[in-house]
Image 1 (cartoon, one colour):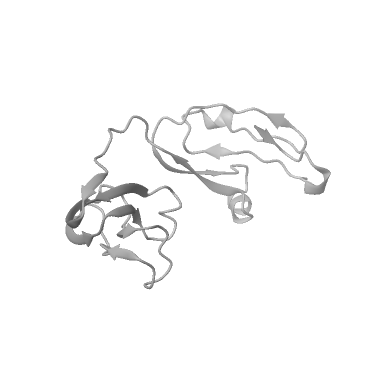
Image 2 (spheres, rainbow, N blue to C red):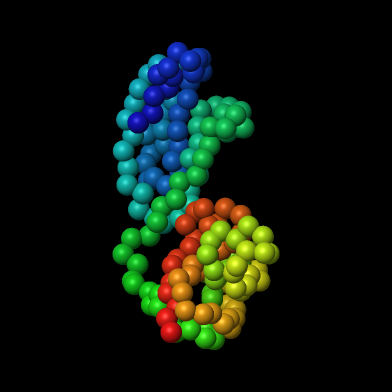
Length: 166
């Protein structure tokens, strides 16, 4: 639901709209500009996984987005097949293919890794889009996470838990 200025403290004096890039709606009707104090309801189902932008689409768009009327929406995929997330202690071979559009740097440890002093096993070389790498690491029994350590990637959900058994 979009409410343009429900609080007097906000002092909204200009019209606004919202454009969800994750939706499949006609922007001319669904994301129409509403006047200060006007309310509208917007409903949609995000059908495609990914990270999508949303922003005020009222002219001048650059001024609105530059004022912070912009954000990101994460749509997670449904019905992914279960992964084998238990491995035996010792040498473990990770074969990783980056099928995305952005580079990644994976670590096995406990997320987040703030510095080189934090405990993590460094797969951590940059994996560019379309590349596949194989890395062998030695892990003791315990609970771990495999995660991308590039800023913002962990926060967007690029992490999975796995257990190393004896």
